[in-house]
Length: 144
Image (cartoon, rainbow, N blue to C red; front, side, top):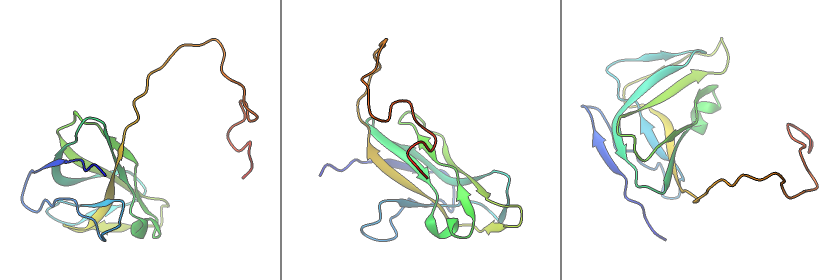
């Protein structure tokens, strides 16, 4: 299996290189690089990681929620990091209900970073598309 090398730049003290919690984990934990506690509520809050990445072309890097936080109603938005982006990685966090509050402390694991290979794709204009049994049915058309 080919291994992609992702270069990491630590932007300030307290920044951490993303790491897997276990050998077979699919995601790399991202940590908060903050100087003090940050309160998370039901409005989006940008939490800095203190790192910038150099992602090789052909690699898809996605920020995803951590399941341990999600079970308590604390999420982050899914996000894609493009191969040409060199700025600080920020994680948008929020809670799913007004009554849920969470405090992020410096160094807390706040999200995970997952890598996949990108499929080469191109678009071709067409007046017709091949028919399928499903057709244009969507948004629940195949059941709950």
